[in-house]
Image 1 (spheres, rainbow, N blue to C red):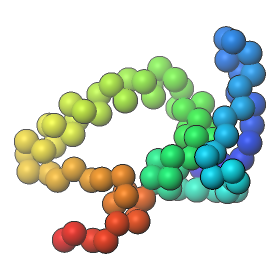
Image 2 (cartoon, rainbow, N blue to C red):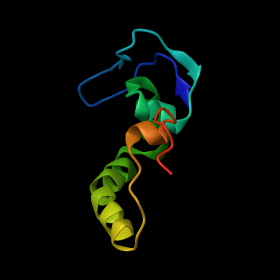
Image 3 (cartoon, rainbow, N blue to C red):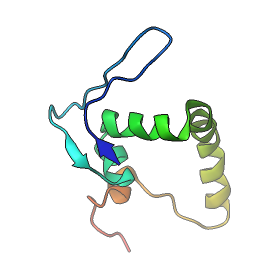
Image 4 (spheres, rainbow, N blue to C red):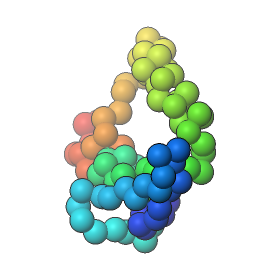
Length: 89
């Protein structure tokens, strides 16, 4: 995904998200974007997928995780998703 500065059109006017790190990466994986809270890359993803679908996924995610846990699947933490946690095996 792109992690480059860009203005996004909103009903309130243009908006330019910023990454807390203060610098940007040409490309990052989704896991890196979410694991490092890269607002710009995540906003690019929402713009690509659409805000309605993104919001629907965010609302459904707790139920999906609960459904998987009930079937023996273990939840994955954000550091694990980003590849920054030791393997718990």
